[in-house]
Figure 1 (cartoon, one colour):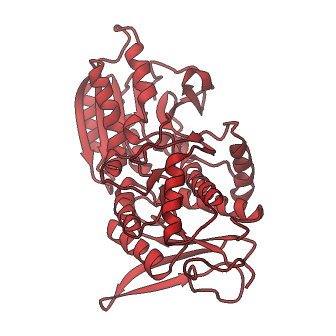
Figure 2 (cartoon, rainbow, N blue to C red; figure 1 turned 180 degrees about the horizontal axis):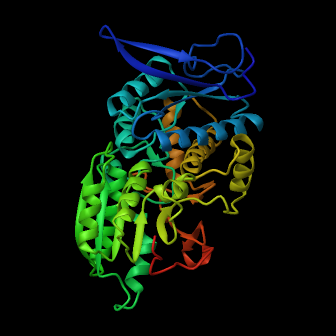
Figure 3 (cartoon, one colour; figure 1 turned 45 degrees about the vertical axis):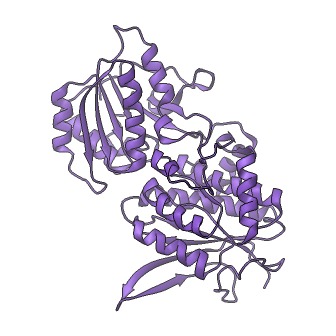
Length: 417
């Protein structure tokens, strides 16, 4: 069958039925009922290249998970519209891991072992990346992932893993820490309060900044960790407000960051500086906190305004496909596709077996031009670039660091919210 001209996306959810796993696959794409997975290594020239992915489309990480899904879909559409990879269309086979580490393992076991997909892309969240990367490693598969930046990811000894973003979690706030440390002593914040989700990435961003600020002499007065499903932030907000910390740092995803900020607003806590991971960069953020965004900071590895040639195309075509510009989650997913595609084109293969190690070796030894800029990795798969710092200024989020990329001057102290 001739490969479909549009992206075929398959989603499945795993459920336990009388002790056995039942898989229900909903197919979208060309007619003909092609439901046989990747067709094994070395598919025919007119067969699609099938790429297996597990994403948290439901559960705690569903909001960013759906963003990653859109990024993958945009990448696949642009590749297919341009003639595919190695002259073959690409097909995404996406499973919903429901934000569960156990389920993500089962998903990649299915995708690689039973469905025999040609390639895999990584999931969202360090919590899901580590167990899924272990499966990919056992099968010898190249594993490029868009959202596993915690230091624990790179301490597992993985040989096939690469993070498709500018910097690891501990260094997301590197430029902000340098800015604060360079302030005159009389202006610099003296105390900081930290609240982080019990998640490797979220804690990594917050504690990476914490370590850097403590080294600069800024005292930590609150350090709270909350579970991923937390919804009531009243007690944590009360501790932060009572501390009167000059600065508040949230190691957050999305809804938790919103809930904490709202709780702090209700207590009329007014920090001189407020920084939150992920949440402030999401499209719904301003409305969710009552449009009281001014001065809130966040690290980001991506801006749709970047002039990298592939980013100009990505923003234009993503916006046409989905109706609004891409965010960081979408961009990191798209970058994942770019890295894998560059390796496939250079090596000339896309299937399980010896091809995978050739792909791994190529990525390890080369720089790839992406929508987040040029990327190169160390031996542990850590990218060797830096995140930008964004801030809500005059009602919109703008780059304030580094100096050579800034769209506005960093506002300090933060206006009242």
